[in-house]
Image (cartoon, rainbow, N blue to C red; front, side, top):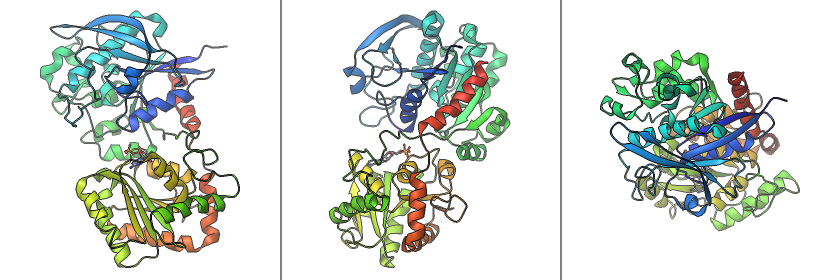
Length: 481
Ligand code: ADP
């Protein structure tokens, strides 16, 4: 029997060790589903001075150094002991670079400012370790976002690491807005390469790690098909490059952890799915209506998320005002935090529209679960959504998503006016368009037979990681053979 393909995920983040966003969730989940007879995945991230990392037991597996142009940078690699994550986790300890209490910024949100140097050191350290430690050397390097985007170039085109050049590289774009660019004056930090190869690193006059990865990786993936399409027409200047590299690109929708998000066993819910779906929905909706002083008999539309422009949260205050001043027959509950003017705008309307509208400002995991289970609809007016998780949680818990046609929302939701419909879709982050979608939701709620049919259909959809992992597995097999 052939040996499993060994994959090493190289990333700046991995849940639960270091997380600032969706990148960590993917790198902390995907490898769990890549442990079978055909694939074995492991992860390496920098060793930050973060609580989870500090609480674990680590075993040193390598000690070495890399040359950074005018100084030698020592580093160590550790492996997690007593590991219950479901995949091997390695961290690189790099003094002066990552022994800080934040991933990209300090406790006050100030960015560290030496990102390029830090992540070049990390990438070189990982490659030095793999060069010298045969037992840890994978068959495939899977790099994530711009922080690890120089690895495909380094292994292919720099004499220092070229003995790893036979390793196929997969590069995944989670967020294409950030490129990690830096000036040519920092070239001395990189391993030596011939001048004529500089074009592989450069985009618009600077070294652009995202562009370099897109040019030099063996296979390029994004976290949804529609996001890949969008990046080809809007990616901060990389549009043409992404069109050019289409032949090696593929969009793979992320999965959700169906063991955590399980309506039958979720311990954060008041009532689990044991009897019927209508009973499950009713018994989770009623406590929300009571707690948040909302009206019985009306549909409950919810929003969960960061109050940020990408999420379209800036339209919420105007939307709420128009919904309730025009007396739409519905309840609305908003859970989130972020931009202070949005927060203030929403909160200030709670007394005026009490009985139909309420907010919870802050992060509350349990409430999020209860809302996914108890709401009738979940609104996502996102401007940008590379994959998006909320819509998948909503579908799994029988809450019909009302989403803008963008990114991963387009890959996971189908308008109920189309075959296999699971939600309601609209085109623009514009109050008029959203109000029209909401009117359709109110009408759908009144049509109980159709409404229940869609809820039942939504709850049966498969958004598990198994599906995504098997798509990645296909790529690994293609490349390893
Ligand atoms: P992001 O761009 O914020 O990473 P995702 O859709 O990838 O968006 O993930 C958002 C996740 O954060 C979801 O699991 C959502 O339920 C959760 N979430 C966002 N805001 C809150 C909040 N205020 N309270 C609880 N959970 C939240």
